[in-house]
Image 1 (cartoon, rainbow, N blue to C red):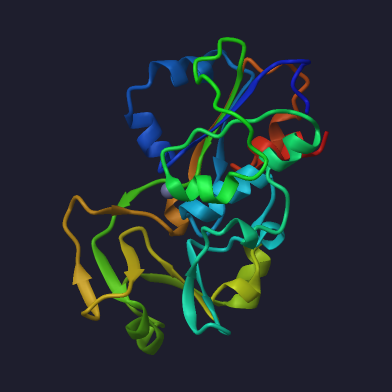
Image 2 (image 1 turned 45 degrees about the horizontal axis):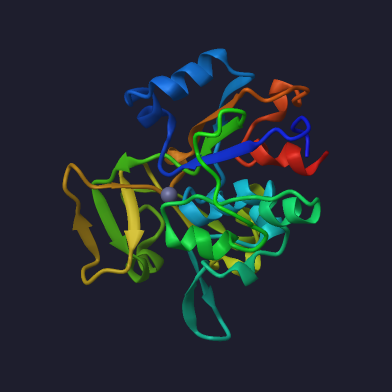
Length: 255
Ligand SMILES: [Zn+2]
């Protein structure tokens, strides 16, 4: 790894920490790392702006087209079912934990979510004290959050998709795979983009109005994220290298 000999490396992924939330939150330690660290940059998340896609992209330093996690769940045509993408066997490339193990580096995974442990257990060794004072800190986020005002049923969307209020864009899977570096065989035939107020789901009614406090993500409007590197012993790649949240770990794989 690029870190200096024996320097511990802490890679943080903050769930839902888009730039507006980050700026509105009182976080003196992160703010100090931002001011005094090696690098601060506003970067883009990976589309769709959901947890598994971004979490795996960060953990693998690669795009969905390479690692294969294209959504939180996908429709498996052979099974005829929606399959949750929480299974480590769906990841096609090595994670930072597996790569570390190959290099003889012990790694620990600290997470609040069970699905994260299911995805990334392989390659990890032991638990690590989070306060380790000699650690370098690398932080980014998976997606932002917005208040959503309405939700559409997916079947209804198929019928009336074009011109529907709240639908920003419709693409076929091939074009979407190319533009968003994802895998056409693991996404639907159509990729439908909701605007900032709109989300999709499987519901009892064609459309539901959501309360003012309802928060969600998944659109192009939750993809602006902070990226912070603090106390990392240089050299780092140039600032311009860090454009997406996955670049937080991508440079480690290139060494
Ligand atoms: Zn999330």
